[in-house]
Amino acid sequence: MRAQSAANQGAMVALVRGLATVEAARASADIPFVVYDDAVAVRDQVAAGLDQRMMTAPDATYQALSTLRAASVRDITTRGADLSRLSDITNDADTPALVLAHRLWGDAAKDTVVLERNPTIRHPGFIPGGMILRVPTNG
Image (cartoon, rainbow, N blue to C red; front, side, top):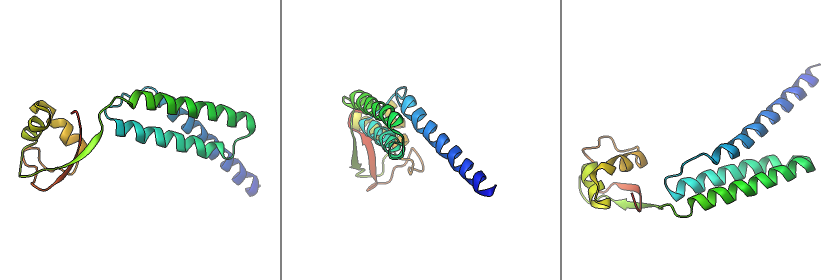
């Protein structure tokens, strides 16, 4: 009885993982990517999850997962193609995020972009000099 219970639990876990993977692929179609790097990260994660499910899937399921994988990769790659890339910059001197955003993109209101991409910044009014920041090339 315990062996059957363990087998049932394993089957249920596999089912839930499979459904979550398929749902992640479906949900990726609704993600509004801001930068190319985010699109690539989601694309790779969805593809890897589907690859994992495909390894143990029966033939009919394998084919459906393969089709879903190809469609997801194509969709995310297409939507991410024209987005700006992330790059690393080094802050030369102690600078507020507003000033840095204005220097980078000519728009101080984009200081939130700097802050969102660099959660280690402790205070938006003081970004230490020498800090390596990850920012989009086109704000």
